[in-house]
Image 1: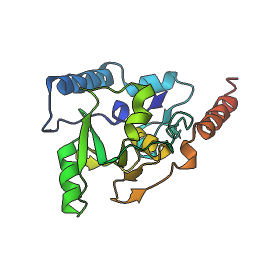
Image 2 (image 1 turned 30 degrees about the horizontal axis):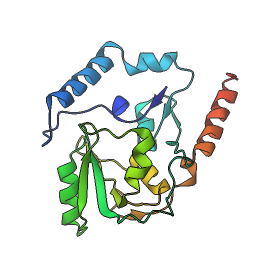
Image 3 (image 1 turned 180 degrees about the vertical axis):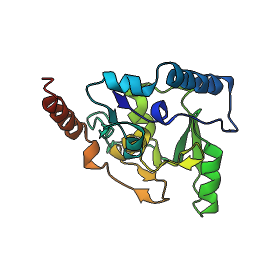
Image 4 (image 1 turned 90 degrees about the vertical axis):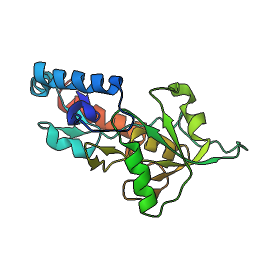
Length: 201
């Protein structure tokens, strides 16, 4: 099993400005899953239980942190581009309070012209994501979920770093360059080690 976030963290009823019937349905389904099936039963059936970020480790039994892998052959800078870059963007979803994040930036003196992209309403094909990312200088990765600021880099933030963008993280610090533990080759080596330890090869 590999948990990514809200699948194990769950969702509380937040009064979000973009609340929709879809997001209410997502919450009801996740609650039903936890009640009827239960994560503990599912975890007992798994050979290994992995999580994509360290903050999820307390939510599982005997969890293993597997960093989010980034395909650096797909997500990479485009040195030949002459396109004028937009300043910044962030992602809106049914689980994040994006207005809180934008207000927080302004309150702390971060004055960026931020485009808010809703990928649930306007999906971007995986093959087209690098070209989309490379149209910006900065990705704002401040996610306010369940009244908490998530203290990790999202998949989009990591993909943005691999494409040469700066990322504004939850500490309001600008990051550059993809951390090596997220290189897909390094992640595969770690997964290979888990399979070997479990005699699954």
